[in-house]
Image (cartoon, rainbow, N blue to C red):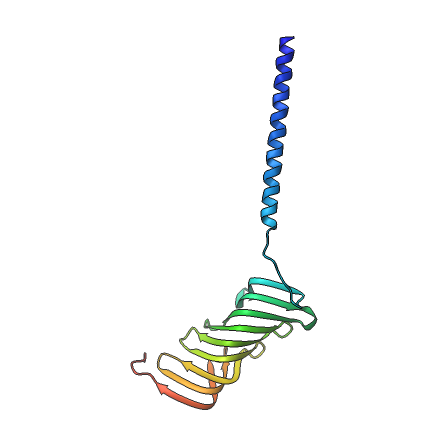
Amino acid sequence: MKRVKISLLLSILLISGVVIVSIWANLQGRKRAEESEKLPEVTTQGADTRLERIRLVEDKHGRKTWELEARSIQHHQDQNLMVVEDIRVIYYAKDGRLFTITGRQGKIHQDSKNIELTGDVVVTSSDGYRFRTQSVAYRDKEKTASTEDPVELEGDQIQMTGKGMIVDMEGKWFRLLRQVRTQLKPGGKG
């Protein structure tokens, strides 16, 4: 009889232990699930989709052609348009040069891959040139960036200002269009 009581007590303790461990494991799983569900609140404000802190990369035939980073993107599916904030686009030219374009706001036309940037726009090339302006339109088919706004250009040996600009990212040339003023820098690399 004593043996039966001991085995019954051990069985109860064993079952109680299994139940306690099961409850504890279930609570831990529920806690992890609740923590993973605490996502930042998202507002769409007329957009079909809104994403925060994104990075997109285009790769063609094993070669990276461009990458885009933005603080936020609002996707308007009916217009095939993405509206971005705090954008940075890096274009990888076939010859290995890089062009980085930054701006406060922008629009990306998904069908053409054309991009319009506004607000403190800076275009920097890996060969040492920096353009500052208020807006730039990038045309993917032509691989050009252009503006009609005033532009400041700075390189190692030169500083220029003008109104309007075209940069051919594959053709290795740029052109300031009007009211161009040029100043050579003393002590520039040469």
